[in-house]
Length: 397
Image 1 (cartoon, rainbow, N blue to C red):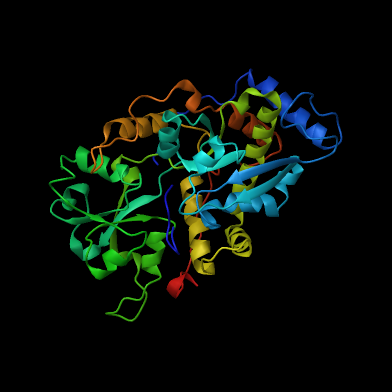
Image 2 (spheres, one colour):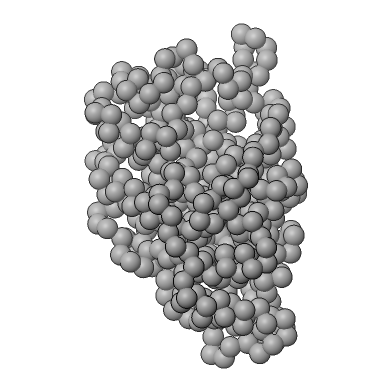
């Protein structure tokens, strides 16, 4: 789990994969059946997920962290009634410092969980039988940020510098980049254990700090430059983007129990949940201000301008999505797995010791959800997406 601040808290897609298959017809029919059941039809018999006639299916979603714009699509799906229209009564459970969402899911305390792919795969390797059923973030949101006058414009420039690293599994994109540049992370840079904020960079203790585009980077732009008395601007900083460097790893995805996916009724619930969640993300894409306010109203402790920045930056990680949001791109998956297996951190550890088995991911359910959304005329690719301009306020207020 990446823990963002306050108090906190990918990779370009590869060749297009055919999304539509004749085999999806049967799965889509199942999904339609559960919607009919939730509207007053007869629910499938002998099912753990099937609701009584006319009732909503209760669903719990476990987040990685507290309510914030990182999860705006899910909150919007509740607020706008997309889950209810799909026959679901969704409860969103916030995360925290001691909560591992994929473990909560594997233990049966949630129906779905949001987790980064490498961390969830590590849990699967350790016995948590969970499956990536929808890859919401299509790109990595992780940066390495320095002051512009530090002269760090490439990974090579990190040589001899104090380089911040959060650890906790967030370091592997950085370590992979250093290794590919021919730098020994343990000898050619000085690693600094970084707090989940930007205080080390601002104090001059770190030359290049880890930051998420949607959170810690914004913290810099919400801070007053003591030399000018004005807020810092993007021109004051240089960033290394792992998507551009080529060491990005897949991040936020929807995970479900592999075992429960063997139950036809839970398959139906999964399709319905993915469909309504994507509707929530489409709403957040087209209505970022409203989506940010929904998150604020849901109890987030972050300021309004920070929340809007976060929603806007999350939209950049999702849209455009060439094959439809939620599709797992095999090239991006393979890159994530390759880095997870072959990149060692400061302790000499890798994320994975072996290739994940075939049950670790599937596009079956998201493809069925996208088929339904396309039939309803939804824009599932966001080809024309343009981020808005967000004016951050001091402290993110």
